[in-house]
Length: 352
Image 1 (tube, rainbow, N blue to C red):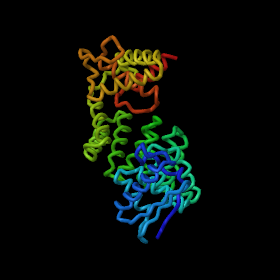
Image 2 (tube, rainbow, N blue to C red; image 1 turned 90 degrees about the horizontal axis):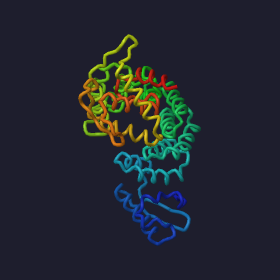
Image 3 (cartoon, helix red, strand yellow; image 1 turned 120 degrees about the vertical axis):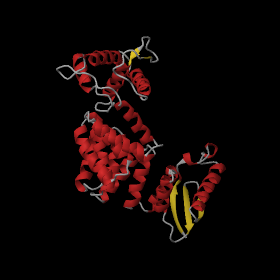
Image 4 (tube, rainbow, N blue to C red; image 1 turned 30 degrees about the horizontal axis):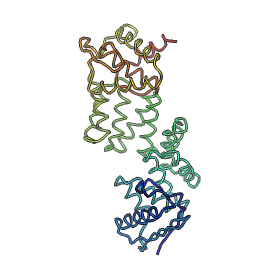
């Protein structure tokens, strides 16, 4: 029999019914036993579980059983938390197995627990300093905890090590786009779609990068591909909204490349957002974005819109300016889908 031991404080209580989460209770021991017996049965393995006051011992009767492979299968079926628990158990026995560390770090990122993922992935890179996927996963974790500079450094390193890795190219392009560098982002995202032409996320980000450069034709082509690849999923839905935002009439420009009406609306939007507490400004931006996801005709002043908290009706151009200004003020460089960046930069400069 193969077996391994885990301290009880490393067991994820969220996997048990709420009434059985007191580790001192008999209900906890029964629930843990039931959980693992069910998990091993579903994987075709005869499992044995023993709970002591301090540890959890799990064993199985199957020489060919690999807990890491089983955990990956669980994650692929959407049972990420179950997969993480199995990887945690296996890690207690094999603390420095690279494949285990990589998959545990990726799974924790998927659960939104990137702070837990960081030391695991850093350990992987101590063991294998040129591990491309580990470096990318660490960059994802760093980015999700707000350390954009560290994330950029990780993705840049990964691409330098292996330019043919589509995950590295995708993530480097994605963070450059988020940083307001669409031209650089687009170069990496074009490589990503060449390397992995069936990845909807790569096409979505490529479309957003092209839109940020006002290359509407390329943006529509890329967003259309993303919609086709993920017609009913979140990526396809995002691409659909971005496509709709592109379907607006171009705004006439003056000699400086600015639209006077858009500039006036942008000044109003920035001024109004600056008068609000940050949480209220974000809430208003979200309301405007929800309104705008069905499309806005920026050149139709006759059509009016209403937002909660604003007494006066708004033209579509004002709604678009609220969306664009709110996004740029909260996260500079975030694409809004509207060709209003020049007006935003001029209006923003006028407020200082």
